[in-house]
Length: 221
Image (spheres, rainbow, N blue to C red):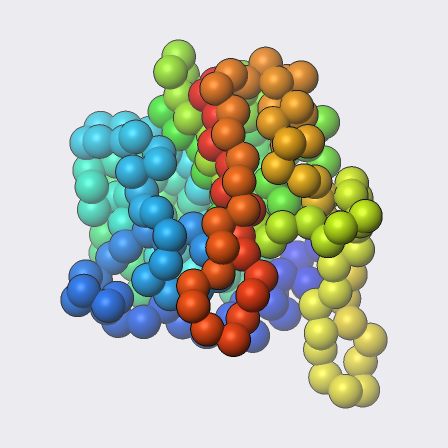
């Protein structure tokens, strides 16, 4: 299983989602690292009764929004701290289910099928795509969608990379693996694993001092 200590540490560093977004909504879907920026849940094409899986649900904000739309929304995370935070804030949302475990292992073990699987800076970024993508596709219903977002790859740094989660000044950072590719390569990888209609692009950052955009990928199963 993925190192839970690293993600429990990350949970302490990640701020809570705001009570409302810029237009006053109490739940909303956000693909990027910037507030009130980019597309929303419409990328998943879900409606009431859809089954949705969030791989790396964190503190559950996106998952809660899916549930309020009438979806059966399953969130998976390896971090107990993240899941406790999600349950504390969103535990009374109907249709939302939280599970602890590794994405590859859960998908290999489950018999449940989904209309949409998504990952927002989550497990798709931190799992070997050759292991994860085949079992995602196996669990997608006909017409199902896979979508994920993460930071764009640094030029020349592709494939499995080291990602550091800082701790105190007296402790070494914790290290997890992530998988980085350019948009065109992601489209090729998805096609290699049987996905169709793949699209991948880097969404520019909103106006301001920060310049790093968001890689946004979508494909049909």
